[in-house]
Length: 400
Image 1 (cartoon, one colour):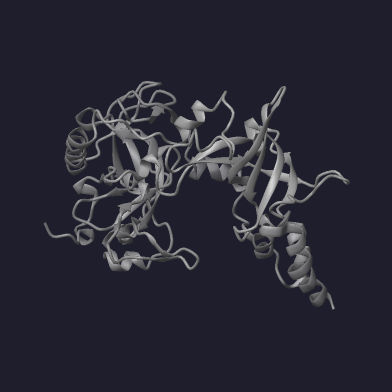
Image 2 (tube, rainbow, N blue to C red; image 1 turned 90 degrees about the vertical axis):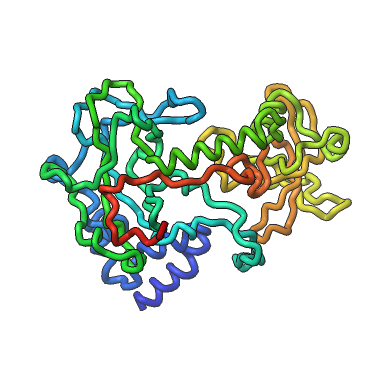
């Protein structure tokens, strides 16, 4: 009977109460009711499943590495965006940061193809890829290999290219007897096909200071000669084909334009259209209208709701952001404008709803799929080159 009750709670009650989170919660709770006491004694489902997550201060002192070396900031390198900076003085040959590496045996997996059938998730590969994922710019690799490595250590992806002026270098962890992390050396002898069968994160690299680095100084490494050549070619291509030409307006640009300007309605959008591939969107959590209020659009049969959230910064979540059509707008003291927005709030994507009293602050703009700057045709994509001394010959499967 206990097992029947447990099954009912997990399959029926939990699904109703937890909604989309039910599957995750269900995976943490054992189906056998006799184990529930052990979960309670462990301090909850998470600690029951992951008993080794909490370590003693003595264990951390012996095996841990303090992450006090790096902070992020605006890079000093032109057009580099963000960068990694020394959070304290770092001595020559000191390990700055360690990073586990997720290996991808074939970097072609990062190529992008158009959807053949979006509902089934199949791709149309007949005309070849139309681009590569942005992740390719942040992985480590080698020009003679198809295998690349995704760094997962904190702030590592912010370390920019310093060329001959770099103040740090990349090494395998375990090269120094004082390393707190040891590399799984046997994997350095695996072939790429063998590495493709390894499902765990087994390799760890580190960033080491080449010289003394002062607090506040930007940390850089040398991305390698092949990366530099690829970047130089890209710069030449950009100057020949795009420099000096107007750049199409994107969602961020339009958002600034409409910060203190009301959004267009169905009556004004024809005279003042948004740029191509830019769409109005709103963050929408809804509630029922008061009793006695019209709850259905008489012309379209669309259900009418009222805006309920977000009202706090923490509530602005991509999970409640919807592309909308603004039906009308009214001035609202303290809120600039309130809108009636039509959006598809259902899971199927076809059931539209009208939402009243949406404040201007809850609305924004989004770029259409694959139209943001990172998807510009011919955008730069090239992995960071690992030094030859790090890269085993058995991984070099590209003949040049």
